[in-house]
Image 1 (cartoon, rainbow, N blue to C red):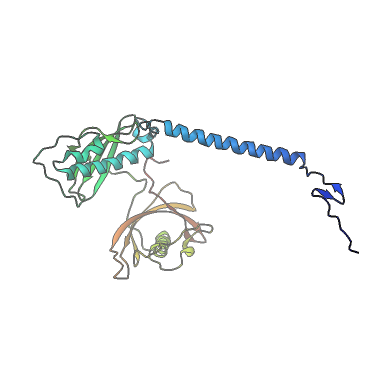
Image 2 (cartoon, one colour):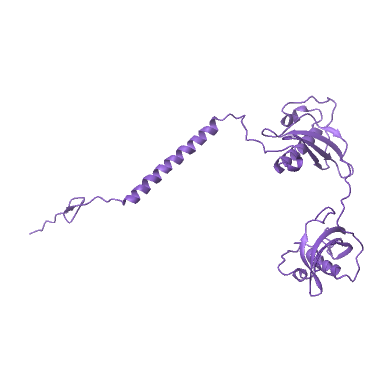
Length: 303
C-alpha cells in the first residue's frame, strides 16, 4: 500500500506558521535615514541645476579682486590682463584695415584706415609693463620685436566684470626707462687662486652643472641638491667673487660670476656663458661645504 506524504503549506515550518523576519530597530532606522538622505540630495541637485538653467546668460562669475596698488594686486588678474594685451596687440598689427578682427577684444568693430596693411609678425610679442589705472583696470605696455629693436604699444584692459576687454585702440609709446643698477651687498673682485672658498665653489659647480665628480662631496651633511639632468658646460672658471660681510665665522654668503665654457660635447648646442650664483658656505674640517644654493644675491638694503 502506497504511503502518502503531506507537504507543509508555504510559510510553515514543522507544521507551524513561519514568523515574519524582523530587522533590529537600529537597522530599520538606518535604512529609513539613508533613504531620506538620498531623496534630499536628489532634491538639492535638481534645484541647483534648475537655478543654473534659469540664471541669465549675461550673469558672469565675479572677476578676481584687484586693488589699485599693482604691488598688492591679484596675480591672476595681472596674468589675465598681460596675456590679453599681448593677443590684442598681435591682432591689431595683423588686422590691416579689417576692423571686425578686433571686435572680440573691443566689443565693437572699429573703423580702421582703408589703406592700412597687415603686419607680418615674426618677432616676439610680450607684455613688459603693467600698471593699475583703477580697481580692475590696467594699463599694459607690450613690446613687439627683438631686443633692442622693439616698438612699444600701450593698451587699456578692463577686467572688472567677467572676461577682459580692451578700452580703445593700442597707442604707440616710447619704451620703458632703462633701470638703474641695483647695489649688491658685496664687492666683486677677481678671486685668489689659492682661496679655499673658490676651490669648494668651483668643485660644486663642476659637479652640479658639468657632471664632473660627485656632488655630495661638496655638500654639507643633510643638504639635498640634484645635479643638472643634462650637462651645460665642460668646466667652470670663477672669474669674480665677493663675500658678504657680517656672517658668522663658520658661515659665508658668497656671490660669484662663473664662466661656463660650453659643453665638451660639440653637438650639445651649448656655448660659453657667464652666470651669477649665490652660495651659502659652511666651514668644516678646514674646508668649505655648500650649505645652500641661494635664489638671489643680497641687496645692499637687505638686513
